Image (cartoon, rainbow, N blue to C red; front, side, top):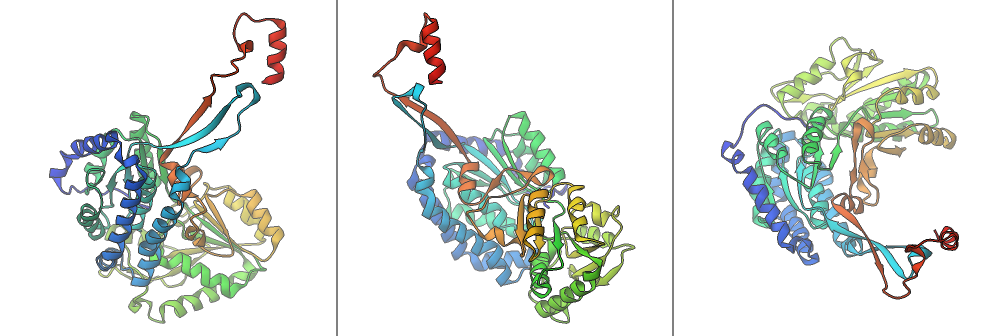
Length: 469
């Protein structure tokens, strides 16, 4: 997903990073970010910022990624507004002590978990959804009562610049700071002591983040990516399946961590599925996709060259057109690429969809299991037995049956990876918990101080204790 380019921006800020982090830590120590009123105020201000600045946000997203207004609203602005509203509705409940039972041996008494903020946290965003992937984790961090440093992606330069400009206008600058820059600034940030680091991006940089965090024994949430499979079984409604694959694969020109990375389908069904996908692509984006206002662009020339390289020697059955100057890369379907090719070894993260044909759809399960655990898995089927077989015999961060990444819209579901696709999760209460420490508390009465647990011991005491514990 995201990566760090070897450019240096805002060199003056590099020397200020330690001071910025120290100032946030002082703010947290003062105690006021813990207050419910502060959390609510900051969340309301973030919502106000998102709505009042939406025209600038839309313009920045279009400049960086060619995103149309509808897509930007759905996946970035509206997503953040909805997340804030859900959090405000639930926050008071999330902050309450979580009571648990107390064993007989500890009676009279009560036991509970008390959510408390971690402290000062670092949020490193990604370039593919450069607004959402900074502020969705921030919503969770604020709701839990933390101070935060935001590091937007330098690859989405216009959005990064806008975030740095508008955040101080709306949010508490003593508690929330933005640091722009690239590899040098990120490296310097990772040297600082944080109570949690939240990183969205690729596996390579994820390992760098985790190594740096280990120096301070800082816990991390890594939202990475991987090759998310899409299994199409013969009982599926092919027209609906095709529409939902096209929507989820080619949103943001395929630059989505949970986009279907490849499709597994029986040979007997492959021609029908490919024809249906082609039909839906043209229905959504028109005969001349390049002129569609609804189809995005590749973020930069380096990623464009990477994608172009993936197509070398491949069997392209649809698309393949490229315009480097305009960063246009057509929706492209590749049939049965070699499994050892880079196209099938690397996360594509672009508008190329390999379709792998199988003799029997049951072969899809070992095919998926022989590879790293994906961030998402999609299965299209009306066969409940096959559905359960996939759910029971595969592992993925999230699984969606008969749709694309619609699960992202449900704040009651956690989002996160497993294995190489990441660790930890967030969204809704799960994000609140990620940025909280659930402190164990037991409170006991001074009354009825039974002496059974105190020396001197006897056979009778031990016999009674065995019954109680």
